[in-house]
Length: 379
Image 1 (spheres, rainbow, N blue to C red):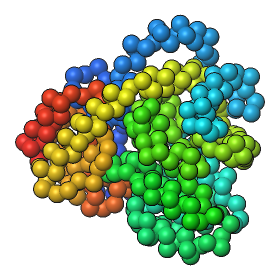
Image 2 (tube, helix red, strand yellow):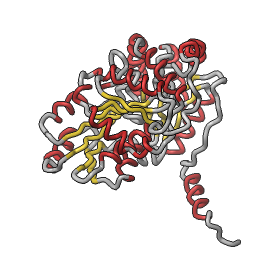
Image 3 (cartoon, one colour):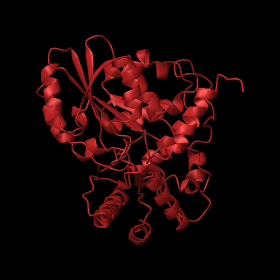
Image 4 (tube, rainbow, N blue to C red):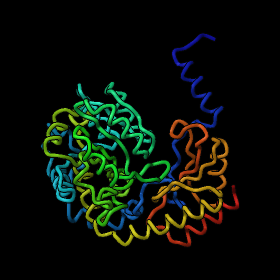
């Protein structure tokens, strides 16, 4: 049989399959009964979107479903500007919209990567941040996860550089642990060349008095130079934003290729994001409930495994250490009406395979107890 240009791709897929790493897009199960622990709808707004639909269209009757051009060309800008102004008022910083968290991180990092810049990356930062550094061919070093002594050594080593961009997440998407933002803000004051870059993707909407993230909760928003937040998780919409200094907003607008060369989000999405953020601002009781059930669930996982769990958020992993076991456990849970994702390489390193439980403020304590009871039966 003659070789084709596609044979090597087929072999790679076959290897993935043999290693229990072959991925498929799951079927839509939103209309089926069950407990959804797969989505990032942390505050339950996405599940309840129909409740807000009529109110939304009364408030935004003329929201267009297409921007038809990039932000630098489009004439349909009102919804985008209103949303940016809302975010600017909340964070007391200038804000700029991007089409997704991936677009934001890749575009911002590419723009920052001028000569004289080094990126100091927590080892567990998101793939979009890693890709930004790689695509920009930027100088970078990695510091041990959440280890400030490791970071300090790098800051001392590169104190002669013009800029050290310290990159981290506030809530980590796979382990659910949190960054020491207060200590990082204090450390930044010791080094004049530090730009502090925090991705709040999994904390926006869920942490802080008004849901602005871990920066709000720890009182360090003003010390963070670049805050990235996503609108497709707790805010139940689409897109992302950066909140930053006025100078950097202008610089990103003029230098971030993912911003300049992308068709803008539809105005209806920007308007819906504004609508959802205004809901999030009032959900302090729901945020307290989410923290309570997350603590309860983490304690239950620790009891089942006999091991400490690093999570300090609504994302709680169950480490199983084997791809096949992760898939089998997820399958057994699914038969019991519990949808939870098996996480495998390359998302996590070999030996770190797990079930990722993504909790929502919509869940009750009874639901948490049922999940824990079922877990004890299946693992």
